[in-house]
Length: 196
Image (tube, rainbow, N blue to C red; front, side, top):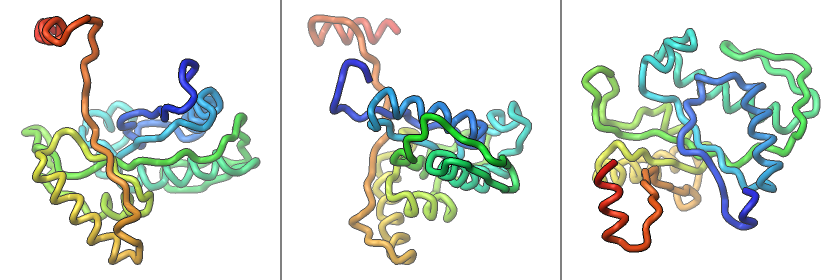
């Protein structure tokens, strides 16, 4: 953030239900201030049951918890005296400083390669489609096939129409992973990466 003035900055996928909205809102506000409003928030409901167990929750709550987290963050980042009463998150008369407004939210989700330990089918859930279309920005996972990403995109565009939203207004970003190394040539970079 300190070295650039035009590059947008963001996180990949924050498992929203694992956090606490007041603390997260404070962190987002600070990031937004430091990068002059260029922070983009990538979040999703997660898929790994253990992530829920360690915070005293159950994976079956992931959709409603994610929706409440987004609602709570919106309240905290836009209102001077914020209050929220949900099933999972509650706070009364909280003021976040700096209060920089809600950043663009990119919703993660979609078809992913099934994990033998988990129960997610390789399709996009209706609740995920609704969440993505509402935000207008989709962060496609890197854990599915290219064909699945294309299929999910077409499903999202069709779902947008059922919600009365222009399908062309949706934006798609693909999560991917990069391994940067300090090397002068392509061959040297590949050699370093292959050692890792």
